[in-house]
Figure: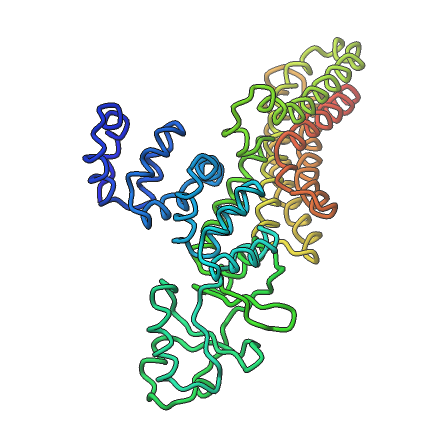
Length: 443
């Protein structure tokens, strides 16, 4: 449905036309409602949430961005929040409750069904960025000794609790995963057929302690819609579905983009000026230090540069080119590491390939700059000095851009941090130093 009517949310609230607003919202997808709530303040957002039926309100809360969702959950009355949590899948409920303060979380969990509460408490034991924190416990499982007719009857019983599934997970009497049976095979099989006769390899099995980013990479690699989650004894604990993986991919991408700028999503939802400044200052100070160092380099080589003033005119060019090449290499390496395309044993191979590509670009730039600058200033010696120094600066910048994320990964720091201010500032200093040394020596 076209979400254009959502543009009238604020005026309808101001005019007190809540019945009309409720009618409009009832026919919209929860994602569209969540998008429409984003410009509203907290008071109006909670007022709109109260106009929705329980199921739609629960779905809307899940669709909100993580930071907005946390703020709304904290602002909702406890009884209303408990009603919403009770309608959610266990993984979504755990995400909501896990971000509440201890007392509020306990109040919410105490107000919902004991079985649902136990499921959420169990999920909260796992790190939120692991498969355990990502999985949901709602699934259809069957013992390998059960018949098709018994399993179909079990599916009817669970139809309201498990909203969407494409496979039945088959376990042994100890709860150990044996495999899966697709709904198609289940429906086509004779009623008396044993599940053991239909079981197939699940394609992907996830360990409960695996990192969520690694799980997302496996989903992409094996092209599955759902995967069972098991413990170290291969006992079935839950399942992860592809919609959860899409959320993970968006989350990881957002983190990388914010970190490329030396920032975080938290900054957007932080109202305090001091807190917002504190999130940005460390990386800006790093750039500031780089600026002081480049100033010191220029001061040190001032006398030599004055002898060949034309060298100074190329400083912006060398810093711009080396910075761009370094950022390209860093971005490619970070993405390769994030997507699993650069494994531990492939680092040297990846660096070698990146240096070959950069070497070709450095040669092309070097020859072009040598000829153009030599022609403009009427001296081939100057052109050679500029071209050679820029070529070397580009090669070194590309190497630093590619190797820095690998170093960050080795010391267990997010490589995305290396692609922003760190690489940029380092390349500025190194490329200027190379340019001044080679340029003043050759020219």
